[in-house]
Length: 390
Image (cartoon, rainbow, N blue to C red; front, side, top):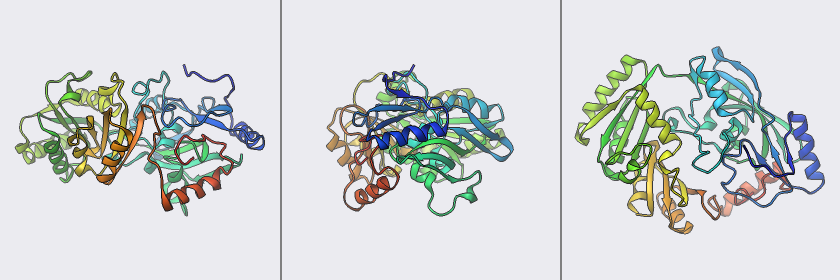
């Protein structure tokens, strides 16, 4: 169960959300906005006067499998949606992770939370990010005003794409009450090719070469030896994995082509569909780092240079997205980690540990962000301080 403060509001309609926010603004009060609360510890902001939980907005509004479109209230649990679409042979294409256990939460993630934080799993390299499947929204601004944007088809998204603006805003601009997303047919089967014992640079070369081939890789990850020896994998050496999805004949043919093209990278084994599914759940949810209490960073860098984060010996790494996403367990101070990410053309976010979670903004970007915040939440009612500039 989610540990909520006594002064917690759990509205069941958008109208109730409007009233709560309007009252907060009028009274000079602030609100912490949460869905399932699984990522509540990330960028924990200033103390607020009350908590606004979206747990009561938990209904699926419309699901049209033939149109590949689903509309639901923001508080619907991801597990509920995954079960719903799987029954129709479909999937949430951005493969949203469940980071509850990684972050010490005892609740389940919601659709609104996944979109507000723009979190995507291993399939991002093939299917795109959460924001790319975010078609429409209904939301309430910090003024207590209802707004709608987008629609049920991509062509309805015209002008400024507010869905993409809200994706990654962490509840600091509006409170999502209803969202529309695109779903896709689920793969008939999957298979994963696994290489053993590659160092980080060599693994990056293998993943880069594979992703540049026409074989439609839907997952590319590397676990250095220390990460691979941890539960649940409990291996003996580094593991580099490439996932293929689709029809059985196509998957088999592409696997054969990849095996030949990558033969110089050494011994390779194949994981069948069941083994492959279990492996990528481990990667998606960063299970190797569940039990380690050290500060945890999520580092986003160009895939071709991601391996250099490990080379810098800042801590213990796990690589996803072909090396573009690095989960880093590190005792190094925040300035060192962030400077290393910036040198590689990326940025670092502290997901677990003390200190500011988000990269500080400066100059024109800070000024632009402040203007956007002022347009949607001029009095700072929503999630004050969650992001450094909010």
